[in-house]
Image (cartoon, rainbow, N blue to C red; front, top):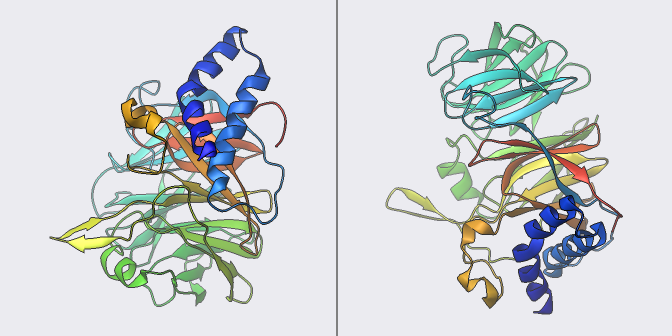
Length: 365
């Protein structure tokens, strides 16, 4: 329980320490100590089997926000970075947008609808060269656009696509629970080349029957040219596949430092805690974002008088390709999307629609 008390002190003092450090009145060592205490709390529920050195991050720059961009978008459903540009899908306006890293709008296309260039449930996006691929859930297709102009190019049919990524050879990997295979690989011309995989997490019956038409569900990341990792927005569970053989190499989970409650269905609504809601690659490791969203997770009594919305942090768990848990990173801000690009960490907030770039501070753990 001493570790939980450490976390209570951390959450209360963290932003004060950051502010003080900026003004020069606090040393970076004090901030490092706070981040280290956060890590202790995150890892206390299931200590890493093999610890690795992990960086410590603090927010450095707000790259994009609805206000700074003149309300051209409202929320970030997904974002990707390619060279000097940022591409994002807006789940509110059903638009696909391109910005420079300075926040200048390059182009904006989309809107609610079913025709070419329109979206009914815009979702994940991926980019390779001059082509952007976008999940269009409600109409059951992947849409392709020119990354320079935003012009619509073509579409392929995929029942309720959840996530996608380009392979180095230009082929496209797509996730779906309504297709025969969970993982489908398409050629650049839209021909299905292969398919494999199925979701094997506990509670998969509910996932398959109730969540298959939600625009947030399965997530993927390409760890290297041949390894694909998959997790779910609603489940503390991950799976790792060999793209060459189609075989599942392993599955993984860990005991989280807050209460896990099963998802239940009643009166037409779905109840439960969202455990994990993004996955990314960090070097040769699998990074899983965990974002507690309820106020009844296991924190010390000192939190009784602190509004829940002021406890503003997220955690990223790191796993080896074998599924072995190697440690966690605590980051300030409640974020819903994570991405490492050229060794820098970028995160998108759900409620405020900000894209934040993080800086590494001080020593490694």
